[in-house]
Image (tube, rainbow, N blue to C red; front, side, top):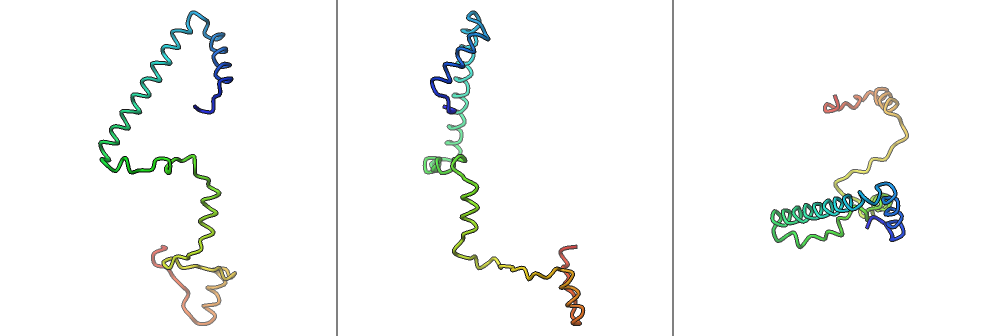
Length: 121
């Protein structure tokens, strides 16, 4: 539960006793219990509503697979860069080392029309 061990919870409890005092501690403990109960009820209600809206597909979803804590951005980028099968729809553009200005000048010197993109302007 949030990485809290028994030792940490004990320290938090001792600090709470000193800060709140023994006369107010039971009241705040009951308020915390109500809050946890309400949060649990809200989560169960949201889960039931999701189950009603999704129908039978709700049970087929692998929720552990969708856990954002399992994603490692370094692994995702590494897998994207080490793609063994190139997509045929994506053209690979290799830079020629020539700037756009130099390419335009070369085409004009050769007597060809400079490339123009109607959609870019």
